[in-house]
Every structure is written in C-alpha cells, then in structure tokens.
Amino acid sequence: MKTKIKRIPYGKQWIGKEELRAMAAVLKSDFLTQGPKVQELETRLAKTVRAKYAVAVANGTAALHLAAIAIGLKPGDEVITTPISFIATSNAALYVGAKPVFVDIDPETQCLDPKLIEAKITPKTKAVFVTDFAGHPADLRAIYRIAQKHHLIVVEDACHALGATYNKHKVGACTHSDLAVFSFHPVKHITTGEGGAITTNNRVLYERLTELRTHGVTRDPQKLLNREAGPWYYEMQNLGFNYRMTDIQAALGIEQLKKLGRFVARRRKIAARYRKAFHSLSFFKIPNEQFQNTHVYHIYPIRLQGKLVSKRKEIFQELQKRGLGVQVHYIPIPSQPYYAKLGYSIKDCPKAEAYYRSAITIPIFPKMTDREIGSVIKIVASVVRSYSK
Image (cartoon, rainbow, N blue to C red; front, side):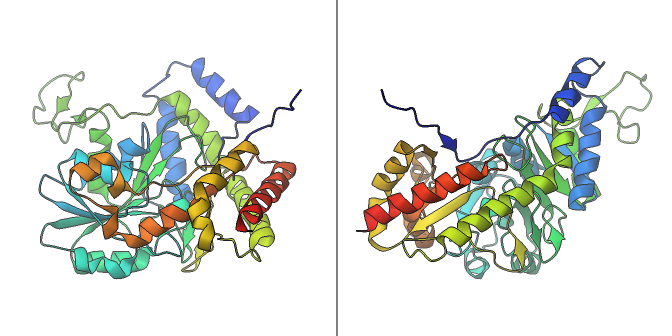
C-alpha cells in the first residue's frame, strides 16, 4: 500500500484563536456589516503603513477598479503597466475603457523597469499602475519621478507587499505613489477571507473612494444637493458599486494585522533558509533584494537556468508528484487570449517572456514548519539536480 504524500501548498493562511474570538464577537453583535469594525481596520491599516487614509473594500480587484475610477480614467486614456502581475492589475484599466500599455520588466526583480517607461508615454498616457512583484517593491522613487515629470498618476499595486519597505518608507505610505492597493486573500500577508484596501494621502481621492464603494451614495450634509430633506435622506451623486467589506471580515483583518510583523519575519526567515541552501546551486536563480528594499516574500519564484528552462514542465510535474504545491506566477498578461484578441503580444516584452519560461514558485508561508521547509529544500534541490544531468 502506497503512503499518501502530504502536500505542502505554495501559500496558506494562519488563523489563530484570537481571530476566531473576534469574529464570534461580531456574530453576537448588532452589526455584521456597515458597523464599527471596518473603520477600526482602516484606522489600524493607515497607521501601520503610515498613510493618512485607508479604505477597506471587498477584494484587491475591487480596490484596483475603484482606484481607476477615482483617478478619473476614461475611455481613450492609456495606462503604463507591467506584463508580470495578476490580470486584475491591467484589467482595472479595461474596466473603465482605458488602454493598458505594457512596459517590460527588470529581470532582477520582475518589477516594471523605470528605464523603459518614457519611451511608451504618449499624450494619452494618464497613469502608471506598478506592481510590487512577489513582495519586492518596484523602483518606486524612479517611477514616481518620471510620473511627476509627465503629470501622471501612480497607482501602486501593493497586493504582494504589505509589510515591505522602500528606502525606509513603508509600502502603502504613498510616499512615491498617489494610491496603494492591497489584497487580503488567504495567501497574502494577512487575510480577511476575501478583502482588500486602498491607502492614500489625498483627501479628495479618499472621499471619492468611500462613496464609490457604497453605490456612489453620500449622506454628508455638506455634499447634499437637497439640504432641506430629513435625516433619512441620501443622494447617489456618482455611479458606484457595492464593494463593501463586512464587519466579520474586518474583525478577522484586525487580529491578522496585529500579527503582520510576526508573519513577515517568518517569511523572511524561511527565505533566508532557502537562500543559504540554494545560493551555491547554478541550476536556478533565487529572489534577491534590490534598491535598499525590504522584501516580504509573498511568493518565492525560482528561475531555472540554461538547458533546464526547456525542462520546466517536467520539473514542475515532478515537484508536484513529490508533494510540493508549486505554481507559476504569472502567465504574462499580454499572452492571455482576451488580450491577444485586443492586439497584444508578449513578444513586445521579451524579458517578461524569458522570466515566465523559467519560473516556478515554491512554497513559502508563515505556518510552514521547519520540517516542511527542510522537505522543500531537499525535494527542490534533488529534482532540479536530477534534470541537470
């Protein structure tokens, strides 16, 4: 009888008794949604990342969508963005009728390469959507400098990077961006089940976002067009959405946020073990920190080298057979069938294409045991070495 292999996923949430107590308390309270917990999470998040404002929403994609609306993107506008991200990043531009313009990546960080941006700017360019890939902040200062020169808005897709720093600035502080977007999906640094948030230091954008997530409705007496109505009165002044987060989710997020430092430290400790074990192997490259950044390792993509690139599928399948929940992050967005129909081609981003052909994401998450970490190291080294012969 064969022994069943225990699978180690590439990512996983870590829910403790504190989260369960907090959610149970909300379930016994008067508010399951639109209560005080969402505002408490927003206040704590803004303080954590050192931004003035935070707006909690239903998920990271909703956050990107609202960001695109809030900054005024419209049909015909162009948005500079990266080909290596989850599809939601560029889809947010499509949602409002804008056109994503893909700029190739820095092959060391897989983030948007600032040196290539200006060549893609046209009179139609209105914004830059930049992703902090895998938990490593992009070269935000360089990108923001270019954006200011050309009067562009920077939306930082920081869904991978809660807890990271850039030149000693917290990701999400919006020191080098106008808005920063986060996801609280279960594989991210903290989770609310599904959920997300937007941070900003711009009061106008903040107020716009809070209305857009609730159908475009306002109850603010100072903003009402009809100020003579009774206390029940509200006005829909813009077309918004129901992108609210529940108090149950917010209660979970509050307790998770308290543990963010511990979660990040554990991810970095695991990455350090991987680095020590893998640094001398020539079969693949491992992630490194650049630009005086703090990498928070949302994912850990290795990049196969030389002849192993052509064996990526076989290596991937063998790692799966050995019990590793490996993945590939990401299939380049321009190569997706929907984008191909719009006329995009990954051939326009050769560095992104080369990265994709070589990448395999191996497990990393705070709840990993030392034994699981050791197993990942042993299996990855063994499998890749066997295919290098």
